[in-house]
Amino acid sequence: MKQWLFILILSLGISKFYTQTNPALQGNEKNEVDFDPALKKNINSKQIKIYTESYWQSNQKNDIHGQISALLNLAKLNFECHQNYNNVLAYIKEIEQLADKDDYLVLSESQAIKSSILIKLGLQKKAKKYIDEEGILSNKILDEDDKRFAKTLYYGSLSLFYKSQNKQNSVIYFSKKQMAEAKWMSDINPTKYSKIIEAANILSTTSIELKDYKSAAYYLKIQEKYIENTSDIKNLSLYYLNKAIFETETTKDIHAAFQDLKKAENLALKIEDEYLLNLIYPKIANVYKSKNDSKSQITYLRKSEKIKEIITENEWKTLQALTLDVNEKNDNAFKKYTLFTSLALIFFAILFFLLKDKVKIQPGGDNSLPDSETNTDEKNFYIEDLYQLALQDDASFYPNYIKKFPHFESQFLQINPSMKTSDIEFCAFMKLGLTDKQIAESKKLTLKAVIAKKYRIRKKLNLSLDIDIASWISKFIN
Image (tube, rainbow, N blue to C red; front, top):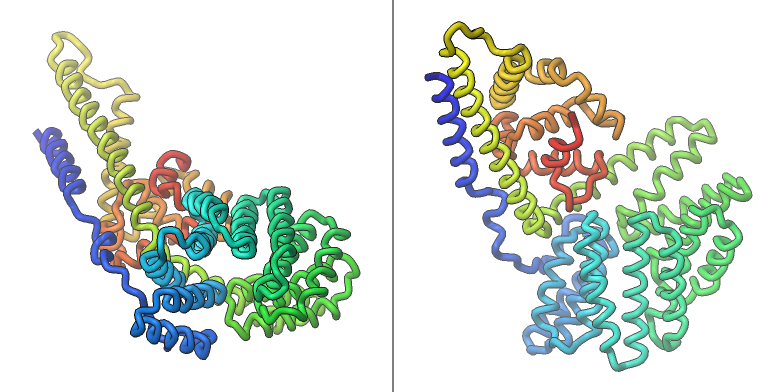
């Protein structure tokens, strides 16, 4: 009787699980643009204030072109400084609502910004769709100079896309095409030199990665040639960073490399570009290490860790707004997978109990089950015990789990030795099929904190957002 009662409770639990509403998907229907110039870190606050004022003046005059221009500048400024991608996406959404369907240049620019954000967040498949759309739109532009500018954006997006996949040959191919388009642009176009330097930056970086120092030197010279014609601080900082890496790997001139790294750092700090600082700080720390200056090395390593935390937080906030559809699809797929698995377990459990009863009533037969079946039964109930310990956040859960699955921890540490016990315990919760809500209740955390923790674990495991982490753990980790 107890066995049948357990099956009934399990069935009701599954039914309840599939009728619950996911709270993470609620309260996100409205996406308003935040035009408050007093932003968190006041990055280029003067320019933001100017563009914001320009937007409102254009809005009052019903000047659509003026509104779009101001919004594009706000989007670019926020994107280039990596402050808050949520703001950028809100600006882009407003731009696409205001723009005419045949304003191909504006729409192409908006696709380029969106694809860049998605690539940085690891959503390559979704990014590629926007890049393809960007290419189609750029071909429809009639003005020759505007078309060339749009093409530089398109080839730049493709270069970034293939860089995220470590396909250096493709990066070089599309960066060269980007540079060629930029060189054909009119000299009076203010973006011409920035685009040439941008392409040369990527080409020099990739050449250094491939140990092609001759090509790297060539592209550094191109940057030096055009650098005085632009006020692009980001590309100037990247130039000094690449130059420092080149000097370190070729001439071994640590002093010159250090001076260039400090120039790169000061420029990145000027625009508070976290992604640039994330590249620069570890390089400076390495220089201090070579000088046996442990104190300064530790200082820059701590700065690097702090920047990584900021980047992770910004990415997570964006994912909250950006990938609800991805999460919902993954959640639905996981629920279906769990439903079918659970129904199969129930079916086999019923079949098992029926066969067990049949064996018991056979005259003169052996009433005991074979050892393998007994062990399976005990294992199922042991997993149920672990499940209950997890729900109660019992301190004995993790030791008992590792005792039962001795290779579970080592498999994660082989992937990333920096994974903490708390990370692996979270993975054990997911392996047992606990929902985000159940984990939050067990660990006395907010749902937001649980989602953030899972995102950090995903980063440590190097899993793209197209992969459901719970399903991946269930499939590949024993």
